[in-house]
Amino acid sequence: MRENLKFSNTLIMWYLINQRDLPWRKSNDPYLIWLSEIILQQTRIAQGTSYYEKFASEFDDIFGLAEADEKTILKLWQGLGYYSRARNLHSTAKIVASQYKGQFPSSYNELIKLKGIGDYTASAIASIAFNQPHATVDGNVFRVLSRIFGIYTPINESKGIKEFKLLAEELLNPEDPGTHNQALMEFGALVCTPKKPKCDTCIFNHTCFALQEKSIDVLPVKLKKLKIRKRYFNYLVFDIKGGSTLLRQRKHKDIWQNLFEFPLHETIQDLQDESELEKVIKTELLIQGSYTLKKYNELPIIHKLTHQTIVTSFWIVKPMEKPRNLTSWRELENLALPVLLQNFVDKYQSTN
Image 1: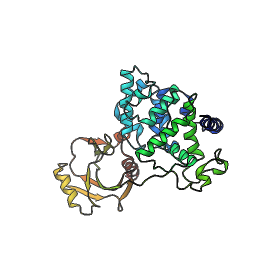
Image 2: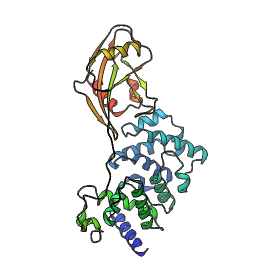
Image 3: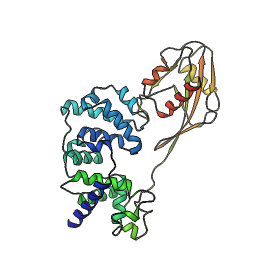
Image 4: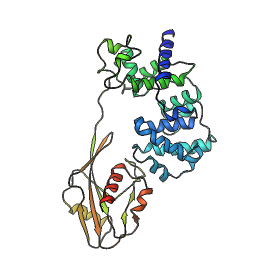
């Protein structure tokens, strides 16, 4: 116990001197802590900070976020990816506003019941906002603990997850769990980094297992399980005289759910023959009159997601007669599009 407390005190002392000036650290408000944690899931701090500031400025409390429509939230979220986080954010805001009268529950067991909140986020809110003794374990914590204590159990297996969580709980400072958790994560982000860690100035370099055993590059151990799915997207971009186009909302459970896109035809390989698209235009989009069809990008655009690679071609369609249910290009500014499509729209509009 004494050694654990020494570890925590050393870590916290380092943190108080070296911590970054991040906006969500200026408040113990559980709403702002929750907002930052959801935004920063699977997102680098450099990118997530501006999104946090946008959301915190647009919705200064949970009620404002709960009352907003989903289109507004998805538009603000545009570019962050993993859009289910945004939908869960909205769902939880509604629950906290209505069932908890705008006050976040203070217990870990109640927090983890909310949408989009798992063990890590529940532990972070409980410890930082409510001083509850729950350890946070993220990628930074896995890395720091595996190296310092020489743990070779894979971090992406249930056994490893349990082992690291147990150790993190043992090391936790019960008097100041919030600061301890933030310090451990910050140490992993600034000192015990994935590549080229700052071992020379590390406060634990005299006792670090990985440094003594020259296994810095080996730890933490992560088994390779990820299989990348390759998909071929063909977008039919209607360019209608008068400044309008055809747009759809993705309703099915897949990537980019509820975001907007041009009519899409997915194929099993890169499409070269226009006849397949012509069939889609006539039978699915019900365009009976004449039109021109031309491929916009000569080479496919590669868009990489965590589990998928999207190989994309944009096809410009100019019909002689106006289809129904058109959307003006200007209106696209207020709609949430996948980054892949937003980048296309920006380029296409700037050159046409």
